[in-house]
Image (cartoon, rainbow, N blue to C red; front, top):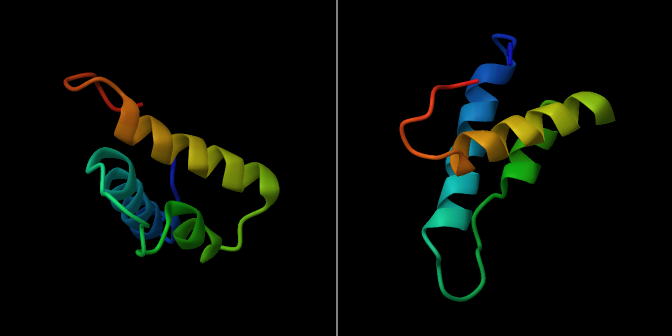
Length: 69
């Protein structure tokens, strides 16, 4: 996926937030910013938001060692 220069740092933050919420298996309520909230900073169209969200999920949940998309 091609990210614009404005999108890249925001999407990287969203990936880290998703990874923390999803993979660290925190107990109790997650109180940090969610990937959704971070992506909303870009004020994307619904179609672009869906593509960015899919990209974030793919980056976190793909098998280790697989190449980037």
